[in-house]
Length: 114
Length: 114
Image (cartoon, rainbow over all chains, first blue to last red; front, top):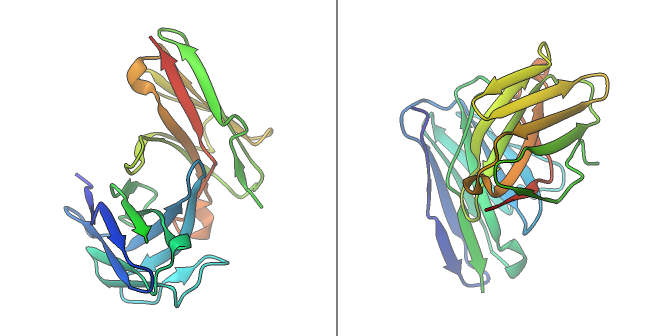
């Protein structure tokens, strides 16, 4: 149990376009989802906490208008990278919680902005 | 401010020997800790956790030790196997915060030599 599906696994987009990444909890309802970004050889950096039915909570230094998060249901959260630029190229990972401290991670999305 | 630190970016161990990965934290409010294993271009997978009410937790070849006074935890893998080669992240959370939010360390790349 506790499977999290993240889609797409890889995406290449042109600079200035927007990209949407989906995170779904397949067999449980996730009251909270988290979005992380990993730079090469760096830690997982928490970007924001996504709560179903309410606004996401962004970490300091993360642009809310740049990284739009929507958690419309208990099984789906989306991260939209708006007006993407090459510096947004990274590995984005979501994780989901059932409301306890058990985390399940998605498989990640490699975003390349050209 | 890096609240969770893994000071060794890499570690090489001979197959069959013990691997010891270390993690230090600064926030005394942290009371729940996890270790994750990550392969390139994949999401992290959960390995083992420990609550601050314990000082040791064991699961098969994996044992996590927690020294609260030193704000230090370690992951022991014995015997180490080539398949254990991956990046290992420790993560810490404060259960009293109610946010289920984890802070990750910078990771240690383990290489188990056959």
